[in-house]
Length: 154
Image (cartoon, rainbow, N blue to C red; front, side, top):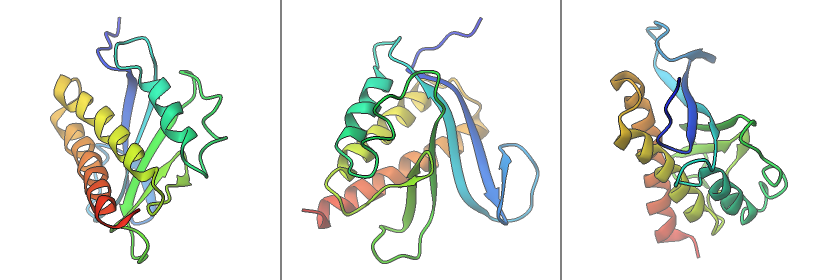
């Protein structure tokens, strides 16, 4: 029996090293390029994470239709990687493979959502310390993008 105290089920971390995405824990000596978290979201807890995802993406131009009919059986993916593009705040951010437009006002809702779900996982301490390190990295990237966006996005 799996007890779930958050609206996030079965989180898994994948790391991209030298162009190959590998499950967390697989030994590789190269530098990490991308951190990806796959999970399922549900409203069966007080957190209402699935409904919050739908609310946030409904305000995001390129994500409106993609998540409208999203269910707790659909895999949700957050991906962060370094960016060299001047329009990004140092990182690429993706939901299920779709780039998040960082200069859109919706960036604040998206970053708050990411920080919220990752913070809940970290506070509950349900994952291993090694996995928590990468969940915290996703949290910090979303926080940085959100704070930078506050300074520059209208």
